[in-house]
Image 1 (spheres, helix red, strand yellow):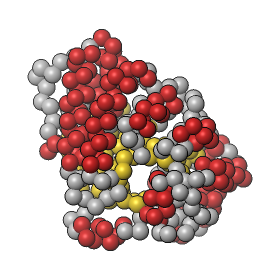
Image 2: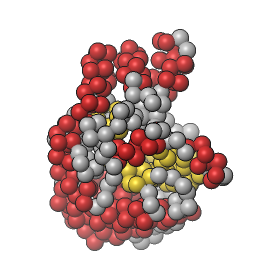
Image 3: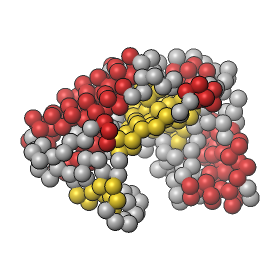
Length: 338
């Protein structure tokens, strides 16, 4: 079995002799590991089973000055420090009056120019099209976070129209992927914080769920799998995500309420594939190398039982990660190489 076949087996909940995995580093910890090990040769030890083959929804950005830019919706951002910060939302009021709503042409996208080459390059790896910010996240990107939270309570008609417009854009983005020979489309929408669903499960079901259901259906109509990234605690809506057809749930942040991966596996492991589960806020940052190796072994043996699991940190390896821990991750993950 090649890497792609291992991922497909995981999605089909079949047991395999190796657990498919991804292990990605941000630039700073990768450079630290180069220096620690004396060369970048460690990168060749990692055999990530999944690869991006294109993107849609890289929102067009216009520079205002060296530190600030404006996105396609008209919101102004500060981008010179981490994390990026929303300085001025495009819609100060819950109204579309005077707003120039973006079209699909205001979003960047890119795929291989030679589809046969793309298929050849990635034939042995599970291929993904990345689809950027999601409905909930763009809603607050347009309105500002506090305004968006108020909208879903006291400006429901406006909030519904906003989400409907964003859903229409998302469906157009999915349509752009129709002829791309990828296995899956990857969405990101952070519905949760450490405690639970930010707008609550009931409002999520009312406003967010039916619109993502349309998007997931459009992806499935293309014969592709749906992947959704979401940080935080979403245990309360896990059955809903399964109901609307989510194939792979990515991140699985174990520090958040109710997100113990082994309990998630117990309750829903036969219905959905979990991708992630290794704690970026706990084990990776604050564990010892031995604890990291032990946790990776446990995830592989317990989460990988009967398929339905792709090994990964809940976030790409972040700046500030102890370099000894990064080295332990490479060692532990590479044990799953084909």
